[in-house]
Structure formats: structure tokens, C-alpha cells
Picture 1: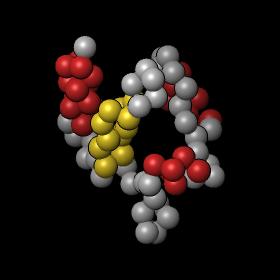
Picture 2: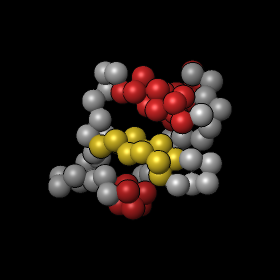
Picture 3: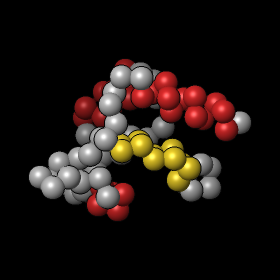
Picture 4: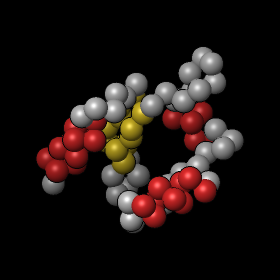
Length: 75
């Protein structure tokens, strides 16, 4: 939890970061692999709580840009 707070403060993020220590949300989204680890994923959720796009097995390089482009083009 402390690392989440530090990260949020460092980048001055205006939203809450999820810490799912009991893996309940991971299970709901189906992003736990066969070894019990996390499948790196991104879910873009609209203002009404509807998932508008999901990315699974995300590679870091270029991903943020791809998601940002999706959001910008929705407007």
C-alpha cells in the first residue's frame, strides 16, 4: 500500500490506485494466470462503469500511447 501512495504522490495522480491484496478484483476480471500471478492488463472503463476496451498480456512499450489514443478518439 505504501508503494501505491508513493507512486501516486510522485506523479501527482488525481485518482485512487487499487491495491487488491486478496485478489478479488483480479478474479472478477479473469486476470490471474495458472501460477497465481497477475496477467498484465488494462481496462478502459467509461463514466457509466462499462468496459469499452480491454487489453490483456500487455507489453509496456507503446501501450500508454495506444490507450491514450483510444481515449482521445472516443471524444
